[in-house]
Length: 121
Image 1 (cartoon, one colour):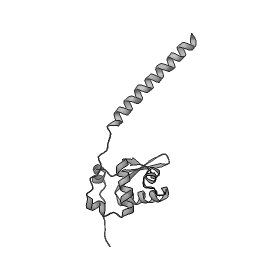
Image 2: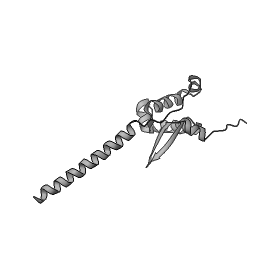
Image 3: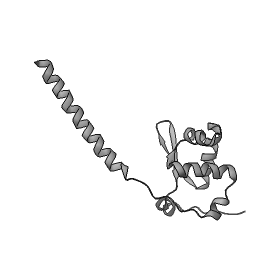
Image 4: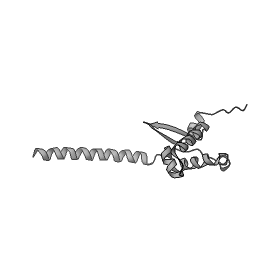
């Protein structure tokens, strides 16, 4: 009889965890940060190799270099370099989760907060 009550407690705890996970999934299912609208002429100003990487990030939402390289068929190191170039140019942003860098499009809110001044020499 003691075993049965222990199993019942474990089962109830697992149900509570499941309900909490369902609530978290529902809360994040509608989360979609607004991305910056880029005109075709601006997109065409990017070199072909960077444009291909940018389009992959735009289609996936948020991804790392490995996911982009699997989609483009290029080496992960090359994609990592291209992603970092796009980040420095202000086309995408990155965030670190443990050892992995995730890249996504720049949102309009972020663009308004950090205006980049370009100086020509």
